[in-house]
Image (cartoon, rainbow, N blue to C red; front, side, top):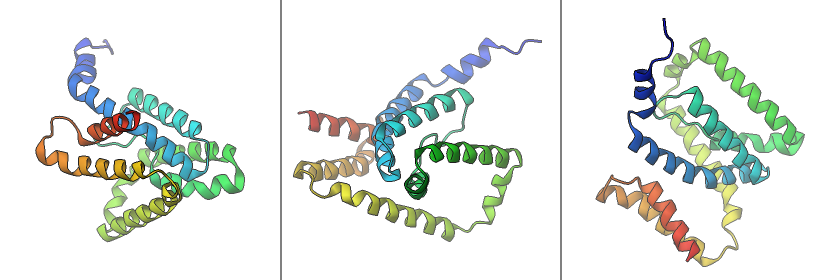
Length: 187
């Protein structure tokens, strides 16, 4: 009885190479500014966020996942960690993250995800909107006193993200936004 099947490996790892490479590029290019931004929100050195995001991505790629699964730092955790880092320091952030992961693993084994059907859509909408407001307020100081070019690139990025999908879906609009913003800044 063999546990290793070449056909299964080919199906799991190489069935959608083009899509996987494109998705990997989008995630990799979007993860860098996201990790830095969430580090600033949480009040830690941006290198900590970059190392953590890289570690999450590598572990998730080998541990497996599901389509649409978020395997990166999230704004919800960054906003919650601000007080923890300020009061207890960076060493408690690692312990809290490991503990949260263990709680998630236990919840997964107990199949507690099915309880989410009891949370109403209005509660989820309120949570997401409140989170957006908290993130906006946390980032507002970062938009004060910056060159005017920053606002132009911000508007250009939003236009690309929202208008490009109306023209074509061949290349993801976030990837185009990142590349155009990079080229505009380096020119």
